[in-house]
Image (cartoon, helix red, strand yellow):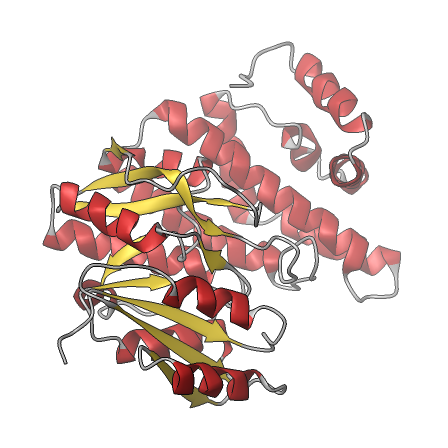
Length: 353
């Protein structure tokens, strides 16, 4: 049997409610050259493993790997090692591919052989917008813009060359943001192999992302959040600097970094398990006093990049950070009032764009 053109790798853990939808969206794809689907049962305590086996018995294109719980990174690494195709795509077990998605990605790759293909996602399961290979080309210096356009951080909206992807690994030491590390490692490798590569960003949404799931900052507390994300952002900034990303992209990138970090600080105040409010406050202030935070604020001062969190973080004001984050989380108009109050306190010396 000839090798399939593309393999879809699906890590599976407690996915009984959504796995059928996910796998059906894969096996129903019509792909020139054929496809394969690898389901990695990562020690699921429910019957997800049996459901994976049922799919493998029903469709010879589906194979299953059963392993102990190694986490999503370990599951993706196992699927990656087992893939034997020209290209791979990652898909989470609670998400789905839209009809025609894989062929659209492959068509875009064929039209620009030296490109790294990525695409948008939709949160509407019933989205009827057409799926086509229409795309825009972005230079390597557009890396920061990819982050800002929500195209960079996740691994499941990209078409990878299997031979290249198998040379990098998801880092299992991270329980948060490990996707970005993998993507940046792949981009670095791609730059060495194909120095003139560009990004091809499809204009259509090819993946349905189920945003009702847990695991994000809004649904689960991460004790190391304010330690892990600075490490990821440091790597992202090195990559952006190496790609010569323009200042007009770096300024909003740094603003976004501050927002992510400040909302992590607010989460310490809101959900850290310490019973004492004083202990939670001390943890939050320790995060605000980190060298990374100081360097980011100084960089933003030089760039003139304003953020609603800029003054509260510079002042180490946990009360203001809490108020801003809670207002944003609940949709309160207080966020806008505090945002503009900070801007006017700086007398317009910093830019909002």
